[in-house]
Length: 380
Image (cartoon, rainbow, N blue to C red; front, side, top):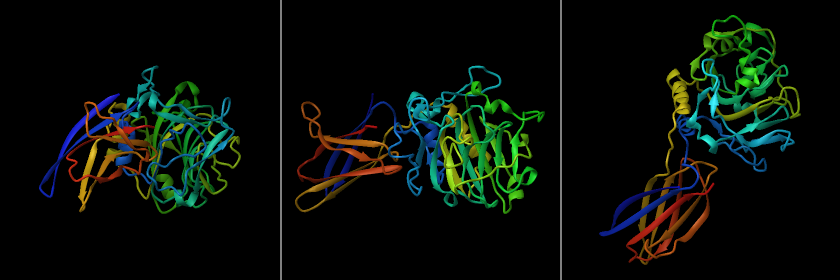
């Protein structure tokens, strides 16, 4: 548990009103380095996949999704899982222990395990497609059954379709379901381009960080404009045309699968985490590098007070406190006028994060109330 104390003097109608704000962080800080960096880059959608139950669906941290993503499958022991361990390390060809990614939050960060039998339906694929698009995610490798989807918007239109897949030859990017080869797709080859990089479908490889993007006005142009980063390395020059072909179904965007049947062979055999989608935008090299640097750098982003507003009426006054927050988190706000022997009064213990900033107003305070202490707690 970490306590942060800050003194904020405020002048209202000649009255000096001192507020002593105490922030207490329970279990974890407001955001880990990677998640905070993603949010600063303003993706259209961001699914952190920290759910521990399927009941309320998959949350879009940015608040732009048409609704919560629907978990499809028989979740539980032996099947797909939510709340599994997130990435601690990602694959390294030079170090059998892998590359540590503490910037994701360590044990506090969770992931979705599709395990060949569960995927997430996000919504109408048209809401997840654009001619320019970037998708960033972590995935845990597993043996492919011919064509597992990490992300697909399931669109037929080659000017908007986008799929990130793992197949018998490894990672594949595709933009035109009606075509194959040079005009439609690229497969990731080894660093020397000697053959497909199948390490991305080997369970022992563990986790990978992927940033994939494209842009253009036709399928062939978009296939020629793929950009791919794997674990902080630009692997675009290792993308080679193949002749497999990548179909679509349902017209619904999905994470970890393609068809309506969650146990279909196109469901990913591994796990996914931190899926961010930028529409009408290709991340720059500098932005892609910033995501990787954030992943490998441990840095907690603490709760901090962002603003205090005091409004005075004829017979009372109110205080509005704003702090940095995350959508989907729950906060509690407590107050007292005496830190020595006073009791903390609960104002609200179920304040839902509204996004980057959350505010709460404490109304009806006496005009002669000159000193007041507040405690904000991140509860879950």
